[in-house]
Length: 116
Image (spheres, rainbow, N blue to C red):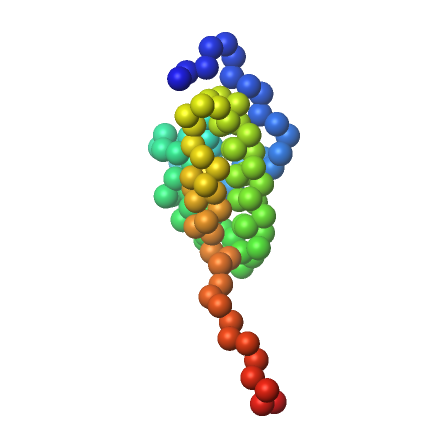
């Protein structure tokens, strides 16, 4: 269902200004809000290219990437629900799209043994 009237104004959450354009001079893979589609390729954001560029850009600081993606997940959930509350993406689908692919996940750590 396409909303009638003007699109809702995005809230003032995290500003989606990453990933930086690469190579320089090419259109950046940033989202168009409130639709959350990629400006460069038109796919749901973050598209594969944006994910790759974000992983490279945040390689040294995966926690920062996790915080950035979590904030954008919250904003996208709000925007997309307001656009189409009846049959838009579910929170789980949006979590997998925005957060679950992040590089900050670590394997389980074995508990320390009694031997020191």
